[in-house]
Image (cartoon, rainbow, N blue to C red; front, side, top):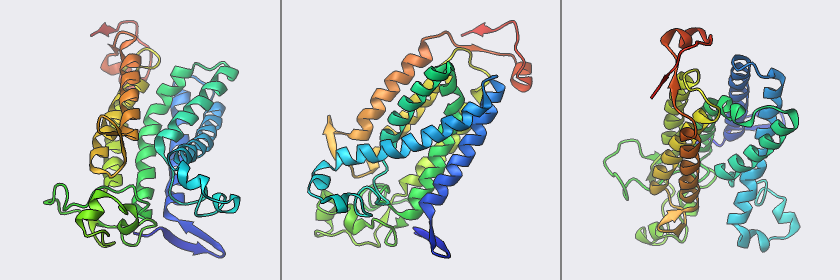
Length: 295
């Protein structure tokens, strides 16, 4: 793992920060393309991307603080605002970011009188590929988002990854867990684990490919975003089974419970309007057609 890529004079360049920057650039470019295709204000696309980025980082940290409230409540103010607290490279919880960013974008679109669900549809492909790119940053930094040791699940896979050089190596990530007990109390840092961030990168790429193909096919605001919520929620629900996260209800982690809620919300958005599709000519040209077929 390479948490720190290189040094530009006094400025260190970290792998996660670099991938987050690439994520912002790619998402902004894709969103502007979709705004143009949907005849929405392209300038608003840049503002929405920036609002989503700020809200995403703030929301992810906020949920992390809620999850680790006992630890934060025992810290001094100096520790809270240090690299061991809020400015730690760890503690970016995706769903916290998604929820706050979505709320902020909603209020922005209302103020600008832009159809919110249409914006969500335009953003769906960007969310899919952006999430995947950010997960590459998690993988390179080794921030604890990786999965169980391969010896505990699917031991036959050849791609178990050594995260000993990460910001949160296995000896710390699995401390006090049942997994650590199986290793005699401490999981060795060179233990090969499932590279779940890379699994999610592949899933994000496939989801982007599907949404990008379907973006000019579905009619009805919210349908494409609903599909994104269902598929991304299902993917996260499954990936969490090979991560070591506390189980809160019915053997499910916090992320899995949120995933179930998002799958339900996505199903509602997807089914609230009849599914229609355009002929092949409309998919290529993007020009409106008079006839659609209901399925």
